[in-house]
Structure formats: structure tokens, C-alpha cells
Image (cartoon, rainbow, N blue to C red; front, top):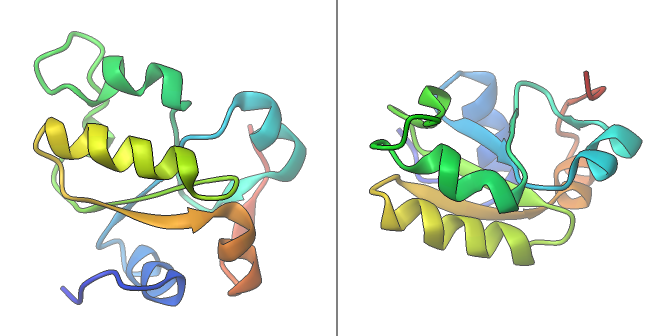
Length: 111
């Protein structure tokens, strides 16, 4: 797999199913703008409960592939990447949702 060094890389890798996209914005933010197509949505505040493979609420969608994390502008994604790395996940901050959209990343409405 090619390394994730930019949003266009993440778009291509997501389209091929080689990475997991993780949106760590709050539900109201995602409801207002949608999210990247196929992204897992876990708000940053809940991520410690969902990212720990030993936790009963572990989200198995975070296992097995590198995780490309985004938020609104990149700051929360950076905190999420540090947290994920602490639990042994391979993760990279791809910035904000606006970066995703600006590079032509596909978007879906929030369920």
C-alpha cells in the first residue's frame, strides 16, 4: 500500500478500500455538512472507549487497516491520531473535512 501523504492519497486509498476513514467531529457538525463517503463517525470524546481493542465497546471497523482521520480543521484529528497510535493503530491526520471536499473527495449525508 502506498503511504498516506496527502488528501488525494487518502481519497484514492479509500476508494480502493485500503484504509479506514475516521471522522471525529461532533454529530451536529456531521449532520450539517455530511461526511466522507464510507467514513466511520466517532466523536473525539468517545474515541477512547471505541479505539481500545481491549474495551467492550471497541469498534472493530478500526482494526486491520490504516486509519485516516479528519475533523473540521485538523486539530482534533491530530489528538485522535495520538490516541489511536497509543492503542497500536496505524493512523494519520489528513486535516479537515474542507480539505477532503476541496480535493474532490466523495461526500455522503449523515444518517
